[in-house]
Length: 388
Image (cartoon, rainbow, N blue to C red; front, top):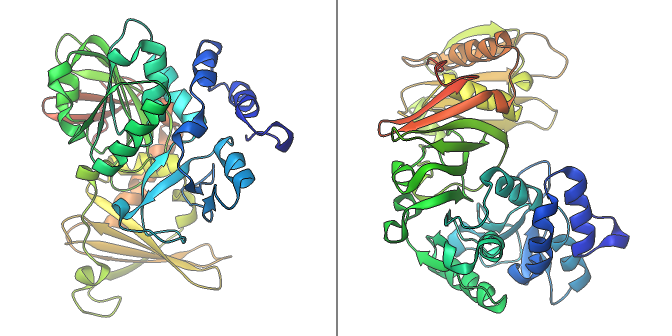
């Protein structure tokens, strides 16, 4: 939901966020005291609420009304491409910094349940808006924000100063946290992760809360809300779907398609079969999330044709296995080719069937437990670990 044209501005966005349930009444004074426009640069690429794509550049200097409309719409705003290497007007290759969708910002702050006298650590300063919201609520001395990119951190610090706020902004590796100011009552990540750094658990008080977007390299992502226990673990359910930029140190380094086929033409040494499960049935965000938990160490890509048909390719991280499935509109049986020690389509189909057998659970039935040995996903209760 976005603000109606006649309501462009903070009040219109506030109305939309309150109506959505994301912005609770106790956060309204903070919302109005820390206007989003103070934390958005002149050049932005507005996002699309239902997806991860970006629209064309909007420049405040040439289109101030369009810029203000974008800022006070419930959409994410890309502010950097390709770690700052892209400087043109077109979209870059990969968005690497943004001002997050307001509905997600306040939804996550609600999950965090952050209030005085809490001390909070944020991973991923970005434009500084989230750090500003927490600083106004808690006091600047109670907020530490870590940003890996020095230029992004510099711009965020300037935004915060202009807003009269002064949280501690650290340039560094967010995986390490910031032990100098530990312990923290609350930890929030505004970048997605594939594994929760155990340092975050160690730097959080017993009973403290960690909120972070979590997902494997396969696809699908959700917000994990973890409570730190006295036994040194952190555990809790996922609360909602999400789509954040990856923590830079956890980005995937994937081999090219040609590596898998070893210089041969498809189908190479692959074994052919057919399936009645359409690839269109497994591309939803929660479907991807569920499959990813049962089919670890994999990722996929799509090769589209002009006639509406496409091929979905599945790859193992170790480059030893691959699979493909051909989709054609109107057919009910699909060609599958698989190669390598793992039968990736068979694993994917079995994982999808498992998800259906569990009653097609949404994100909030899944959960995560983190200990010194890593992350452990579960369904409904922590003792019901998802067996891979």
